[in-house]
Length: 357
Image 1: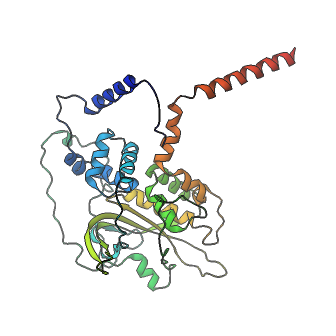
Image 2: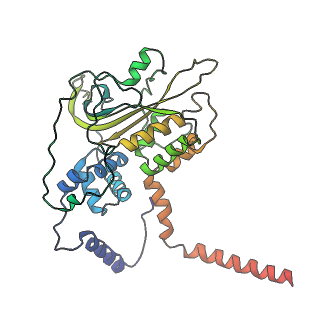
Image 3: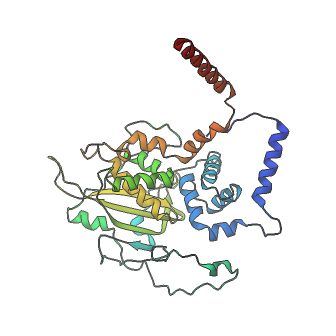
């Protein structure tokens, strides 16, 4: 992102002071604490963690507070801080099949092993403003909590795979790529594409997913399964040689099921789209899964003719930090460039006038 700018030192200091004043707001109103942001603006915190590529709720809350709630600016702040952190190892892939489930639904099967768990969701709300929330200290409704996670909850796609009705999940790259340490090259493997989509702007990914459903992409999707809950993170220290549990994180996973008519080498079967986010990011995970399937067109021998199927278009333009920087750099001085173009326009108009005479 473009951040370098020169100007009067006093003017810039004053701009910073005005920003701090605007950020604080009326001092008669109590200041927001990081705990309040983390607890009561949790979905915003989850988005900043996902697109900032750092699982730390306190840091994401701090970034949101510093950015006055601007999610893209907060993501930029968190990514910038991420570059200062030391790397001491790589964790094993998280096992979402062993998730401590808080929410699990399937739009493809009504009855599935382990059951459907609605969990916390806006799906069944009436989208009416709840003015009771304006009353500070209003009592919280009581919740009857059922015991979840006690029954085995195999993935829906695993059930279909055992019946031979869906493509294998694949094993992925032996050493997954890392977009934060190496440039993006094309054609990009699915590991890099998924990483890019996870870090991509939710609105952009959502729009591409929507376009693929409206005919601008060869997707005929069913939400096979969406699950949200806690998974263990394991690390294998070199000095030990075996995995140890270093903590748990909350993730949302979406397995999208898509039609596939088959080819001369592959029989008709369902294909997969995959999405995963930090925290509770259901909409982003679903959109990610749809775009992931669209980007697999060439891998499956399909013709790629739409924006959501174009690797370079999707992956190069999905990053909100880069997009924001490239757009906002237009605010910086371009006096010399503009004056040269202004002079060129004047010269061309003079030449046209002389030719007309």
